[in-house]
Amino acid sequence: MSFRYFVYISDSKVDMLLQQIDPGATRKRTAEVSVDLKVLKGKRGVEAAVGADRTERLERVVRYLTDFGDLGSVDEPGQFFWGLLPLRWGPLVGADGLSLVYFGGRSERTVLGLGGSRRHVFGAPPSGELDPPLSRSLLPSLLDGIVKAPGIAAAVTEGDGDAEACQDVRRATSGLRGPAQNMEFIAKRLLHGKTADGETVLLGSPLYVALVD
Image (cartoon, rainbow, N blue to C red; front, side, top):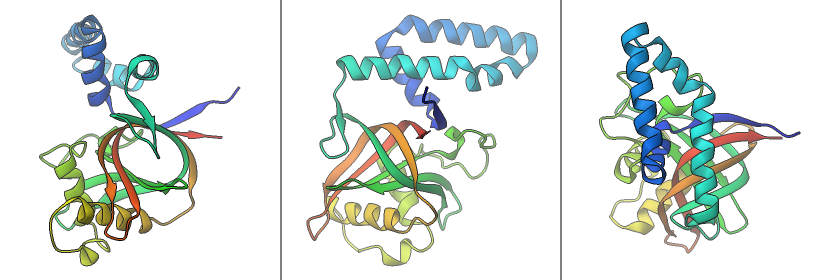
């Protein structure tokens, strides 16, 4: 039996989508956590967020996207896309001191970047001063974090438009160091376009990323 070893789950995106798939599920969970907070001063709420309930809610969303959603691939993304690729990853801290976790790799036809808030990484410390005021799941904040990262900011092309943003994503992916790991993921498409020299680039914000043997 092959297991997925989750390294990243975005509870905020999962809950937002689950509320649209099954509104009763999130109302029930909110009520349960509220009772736990009153009784145990937040301890149960934290435990529930990192326990079996967390992966169960994710799997419900994944099943729905697989069966009914606009779920494409890295080379042909829909509103969401699935992939299984060797990825390098790690934290980026921009020149402004705000944090980001970034995964990068390449398929046969596409340069891929995945970015999100560091608090969604398993084992990460609670939210704090290094978190940006705007979620890293949103395109302006994610691009802002990428172009401000040391080693990337100096090479940023001046100008506006998708081509410049795609070049920033390509630089961020190319700048990752360390061994690549085989990873499975589903992500929300944020940017899909071409660089000035015609290379296809895809940037997304993941629902989950997991190590796969």
